[in-house]
Image 1: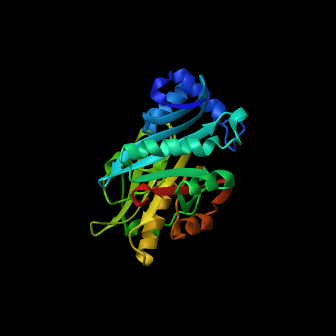
Image 2: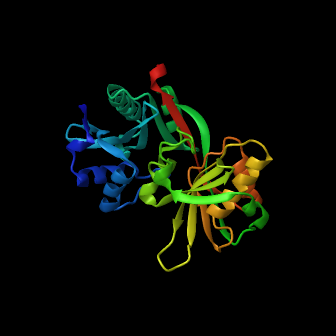
Image 3: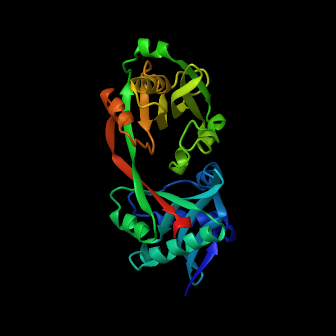
Length: 294
């Protein structure tokens, strides 16, 4: 008999074991330790009360991890992972499980539900679409290494300021509806910071990054989460160039990556490609379910 409980009724050890088994054999297996699993729940704002577990009798067979936050007066939720253990797959349990997860969100008056899915996982994407989700963007994972061309003239045009990502929360610097893990409210927990290009006291462009660096040593890696320009003219593009070459340490020889990067107007990827960034084998889609329109 299929029943459901919330994750708060499991021990962390039980939840971790189910998490590992639920992703077994998927496109991206999750081989993380118990400590890393527990840390992820806190760092990414996941809620045990909102996360649901599917049981067959006494056996936990599937899960949906969920988190929730308020954005401009609306409750926005995120699916932080859906999994079913191998022997219960291809039996339509996924539709039932996701339906129950959405029921919980409705009870908490969630207006918008979001998730990311691997681009080539067409069965999962179709399942989510049947439940009301729509693909609204592609998320890019690009990379480069080494020293890149740094334009000193562009750097002099703008005042570049670095601030902790936390200071960008609830401001109009970055968009409100973005993939959960690249939001300024989440990235501070992994050391994120915002790099801003200003002119005449106006923010013309900004990016959100995380630098991999130990005290006393040079940075050896940097990840780009978001990049935006508030001006569609040439000056806006130059400001975007300025924050990216500063935020991604073009003068340094290190590894640069993008994570769940949205590029609605294609200016970011075009610039990164001109600097030698290359696509990886991974991409995701960003999906949104506007539940208050159902």
